[in-house]
Image (cartoon, rainbow, N blue to C red; front, side, top):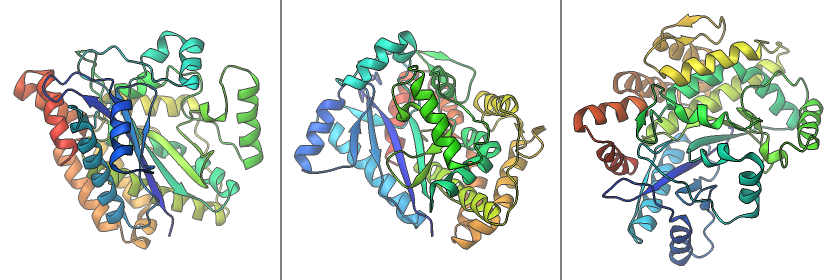
Length: 362
């Protein structure tokens, strides 16, 4: 059974005002004091962000339990220094980001200027184990048209600097300001993948292979493929759904490769349109069907994912749970819908943040 790990980035906020607080260093110090040698929490680009990573898990129930535990631990450490954590992919309230003390981060700020300072955005990255780089590239080549659906499911960033953006995932629009993001053409082989990354680094435009910010890539640290399109999800069960679907899609793609089936070859220009549609509307309007790349109701596209990856979901014992979570998601809505509903109910972006602090731990 393939293992899955999840990395989540959380926003540190004042629990009363909802304003982001640059207290990551203090939270990390508290975590180290409470649990010497802990390797779960890390700093990120800005002091208003805190990242955690789960251990690799083969059981989705165990993965969900670890995500909840890590969120609660992050909240506990933050609470000890007077702040809270919120699983929000952008800050609804205005914020002036504080760059973390780090030579790499300083290089980014000097190299890219203003776009760097916009990157106070929180994502969810999913790692799935693969047997080799060759299998990993075969998987990446076949996942390409399915990734916008994960964007739509996870969309959790409708507000930016005190304004309603009109997007369900505005984080993705901000993230695309880096020069090395987005969908890729098929690589065809691990050798071609590594050559392309090396060529990108050789231009001097990006610092190293860690800045190959593709929507999906080979991990430079682990024997995994890393899927990077998702916003951090307001609800932990949505994060588990993303991880469940990613593992099933990876397994399905690997089986197709072993069976000799060619990878689909949609043009990057169409994949960018599919991604924009998902970021703009989330699950509220049509998505682009991953096979035809034509508009289709979001509920039908989610059903298509469950059908396409159905054998893999059944084989891992996740089919029923995934179907139930999709049904609940369509009824309740993703994080973007939840945030907009909260604003409509309270009339206050501050209240949106403070309520999301509570829900992050729920």
